[in-house]
Length: 242
Image (cartoon, rainbow, N blue to C red; front, top):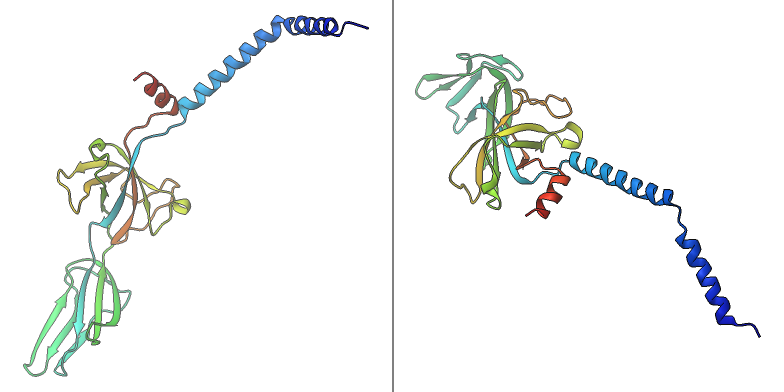
């Protein structure tokens, strides 16, 4: 009867000899490939930015705000004569309307202090009385931007940090976002939040996708304050070296 244990030992020794005869060039190439992969990984991670940020709510307000005149006819003795029509352009000093009081025999003219476009709106007030409103919408060229953010991490917000703004009226996935920098920081809290002004990179509302947005009297949205601009590589090694 053959010696089974001896045969198994022989096969095992032969397998160990085969495995132990790995050519040196395979080891060298393996080390080289691992080294190249490590270099590529380090290069990619050093170029992928992953900044810390704070989210906040943003208000973009036209520096020249609209003006309006509201008319209510409370009794029959009042009469009004409009001197403007919907869509008309007016300049400072132009007469919008003249009101007459029959019982007193007096009249009063209402003029506009600004240049703008006329919008006439009819409606009713809380007492269900007819109201007519004359809006004068100026063609504003400048805006004021403010951002409000929570207390958590607020001490890391500094002047000059970058801000990205997505407006509710113009979704960022379609129009892109506005870019700016933190201007001044209000040293006190308002409504349990911190507030700072934002200086836009460009005077026009030009988005990251190259689209120019119209300046409306008031626009709201969300803002992201970029606290730093570290890469993934810097994050990994800074945490290791602490």
